[in-house]
Figure 1: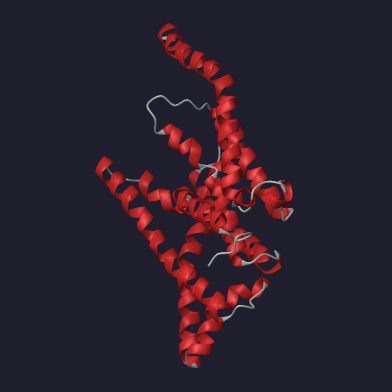
Figure 2: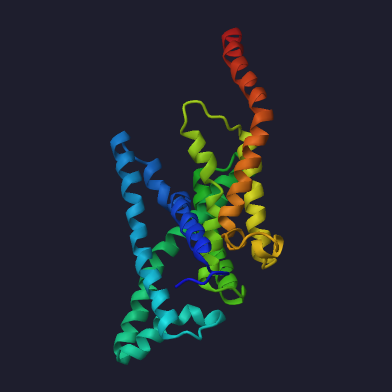
Length: 272
């Protein structure tokens, strides 16, 4: 049974929404959709992608089992829940197999994330500063950024002071801020402007960073609010403010953007 306060049912539902919606936003996940050969392949990728989240159900089962079998897990010891259960239930050689399988299972997604992050740093950031950078130079920069990103990740892992579940939920909360602009971009008449989408995403990321670094929650910000609001996951709170600000800024900048788009064809006709 989930408690009435803290990790309550509202926290659980909001966390599930954060993970479910944020799954689409990972660069290594939607890359297959962007490279689809045709519309049919795009639909299949979008339909099959959520099936990967079924594996999260087994992770939840492990967590619930750990709560029942090892109720006194605190802090960083929660990261060792699976090993503690396996150690109590199986012989040592099976525990070794579990550890090896966990290491191999982490290598594939981690390598994809590191390579994607290094590519974004080189192509989307470095090349934006120096547009004349060649593809060969970008490839070399990507290889240089890979060990740098890996080292930074290790530092945060060992000295960040957060558990793996805290790091995971923070990461999903970050990428979740891309979800509202994506949904609106699929509409025939997109009501969101570039400025609105940018300001909304920046605000959402700043809120997630603030809540994480300050170790704040909705309960600390709104101590008199109902418990179902105090227990909401920060990802849902950040995306709510993201959506409100995005629509508000778009309402003032959308007209200017439409005027610019209408003037461009006229300029092309004149110059031609």
